Length: 439
Image 1 (tube, rainbow, N blue to C red):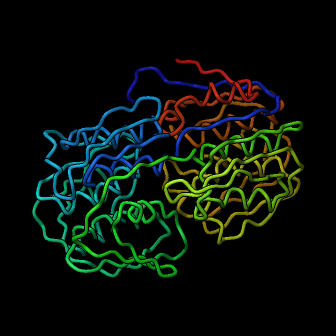
Image 2: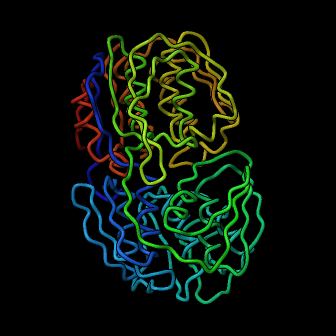
């Protein structure tokens, strides 16, 4: 933790969510706008940029490598691209905080540079698995030293990369993107096949900046030696951040909330599909395309939820939204079963175990399994739960307060700033009774 104080939340029971909100910009797209804008030729203007710690870590990394970046100011960033081969060595280790996206995508980009880089992170990030990127990068010819597959990563200079054909062992957009970004610097073609669809923001943005990407079913191919051309990027509101309010409105009687300009990329809408299967009242309006990304306003009104078996084909499309969906399951009639979600155990925390433990403290029958969870809906009580420094766990338990019988205290919430800088302010405006305190 960077500060000496620990941030905790106190949520008072009850309330309903109402009104119109715009949640912060999409984290995945904000990261990629900085990375690809920096490597483009010309000036890239970004609006709607997420000014959260994770995306700011990416921005600081590229500044450290010699890219002139103005902002962020009110979500606006101006990036003076240096071209594919214009980055310079940072004069110190590149610190990426809590951001798994930053470290995994940067590993791919930096594998093709002619300078050595060392990537480091906070305690949480330092415990996350990196062999999933270092192994395929080594197959391409990169030389990367790690601490038994964990940080720090030392990416050595001057190794010529060669394209590979690679089947991902897990459905991971971060690993897919890492290999594709390295593929821009590799000789020949790089082809990645995924076991299930994952978010395709990298492919869309590469295409939008003029770099040819071939998508054929579950396979993506890129050829080395191309170039990126600067463009304007309007970052949609983040569906992962919108999820907390969608679930809150779905479980709290009398709720009626509209979330505006939310990204509804087909690889990210698992949360909408799953909530609808549970009986949620969700409607979309003002659908449009911005920078190749579909957006819409999402209206959610309270409706009674029912437990379901979550279809496995929806799991990769909702991987970051499950902590909040577990709260929906806790408020639903009957049992909800999730399988095929092993990835949740290697996120910022073991999200399956963290949510099962917290829900049990709050009086809900939640049993974790090797690859998922079984939750029987019931009455949420009160108690003190641990977020394990995981932003999504913290915000999920906050939303549970809408249906709680008493006060919920959530410990160690400082990392909420990584993805949702003004969560308390927006949640309060919408109708949640929540306060932050330091100890």
